[in-house]
Amino acid sequence: MNRGQFAYQVGRLARSNYDILFLALAARLGTHSFQRFSEAQDISDLGDVSLGTILGVSATISALYAIYGGAARLLSQYHSWKINRNADDYPLEFAESVVIDDKDGLNFLLEKTHASGKTRWGTFLKAHDDNGRAVIDDISDIEECRKQGLITQGKRGGSNLELFKGRDMGYDGYHHYHRDISPKLLGASNYAIELHDGISPDNWINLLTFNVPEGPEIIGFNRRCVYIPMGPSKQELIPATPKRIKAYLGLRDFL
Image (cartoon, rainbow, N blue to C red; front, side, top):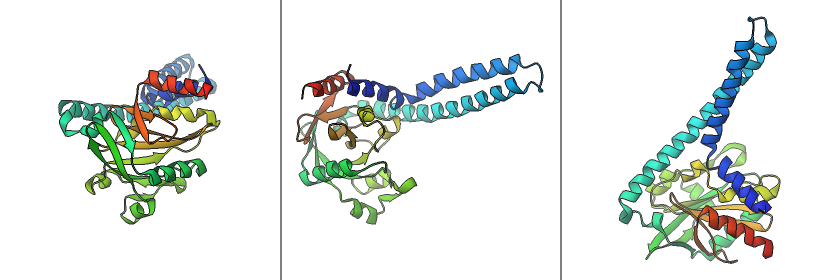
């Protein structure tokens, strides 16, 4: 297992399954908190009482994160169930590949990703189904989206994307950038889609960019699948299971 594959496995745990991770952590901390209170002789036993309180608060915070992530998982699973029942109504969810026809827009995303740091940003996409291919015709200009009220100011200078307003205005997907994390080799964790990234309007095809040691990377995703680049141009993205993503990351050792 190389560093990229290891980072991806970390991402699958920390990004895609953090509700389960925090639930286990909450149970562990709660158990230790109960034990500390049980060992305290009385309220004057400040050591056990203080530690028990700290552990109890930590368990509560972990439980809230678990609930937050679990709600996102349930919502996503409900929409996936609805989509699977009416597949013909959601062709972009069942795309056999993703083709980015907007070359200028793609180059802009990759160049801006390479130059970006810790500020999150993104934009909106226009796409259509072409006999099983999701074709991205237009990667919208960020300033135009701001003027339309689709992108608003977020925390720490970042951007908020008004996804459902975008749906109502006829967009078919969104792009967002995952800010750099240190060390950069952990950038490969971004191949694992976060639970909350999957909460978008139905029948959308989305793009995610991030930096890895080899340079800027782009992947696609919807509720059903992750799509990785088929070649160095990154214009065509193909479906990827976790096994294929690990093979893709392993191949980089020989490039």
